Amino acid sequence: MEINVLASGGFRAAYVALLPGFEATSEHTVVSNWGGSMGAGPNSIPTRLQNGDMFDVVIMASDGLDELIKLGKVREGSRVDLARSLVGVAVREGAPKPDLSSGESVKRALLEAPSIAFSNSASGVYLLRMFEEMGIGEEMRAKRVESTQPGPVGAMVARGEAALGFQQVSELLPVPGIDFVGPLPDEVQEVTIFAAGIPTSAQQPEAARTLIAYLSAPTAAMTIRSTGMEPC
Image (cartoon, rainbow, N blue to C red; front, side):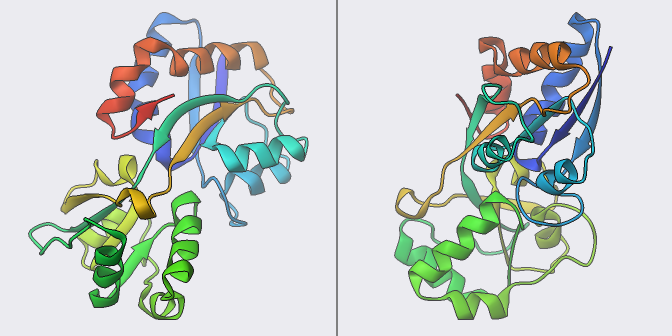
């Protein structure tokens, strides 16, 4: 039986690592699709569900999933938390690493950086709020660069398009050509819960439950940790 999944990048590394084990031990095959947890872009998860695209499982930031449940696009009671994720910082390989020891040092690094990059999804929504709370929103709007090529924020940093990149740790770690500096310090950190749910339009809801159970099982914990997240 074929399970259609729509997932955001934050859980991608763990999902890709876990999927072969699921397919090898079940009677199901999985078709994977990718989109952002938030935003109104054509490939974002909310937009695709609102447009009537049909999937059996969605994996995304829990705030966005809860909103889709309220809108009747995801089944009430189907949410299963998978992992806790932190926002991290990266620089181009070999570049000086900024001090991330405190909120003030992060603010200083932001003001000193010639350019920054961050996503349009969960971590990016938080960063825009963090900039305003730090009182540097205007400065950061002037420094933000948009990617000229597809790919994660880390790829922009590796190509030299941005001096600092901010994204979920799990999305930065796999990218070649960058140095991962570390997560934001606790005082300015945002923990994102990535969760799975079953859309109301799911064609294979029972098969979807077996996949979600596999991704949230204790046996998945080590793999999830290896990608920079903590299992729920």
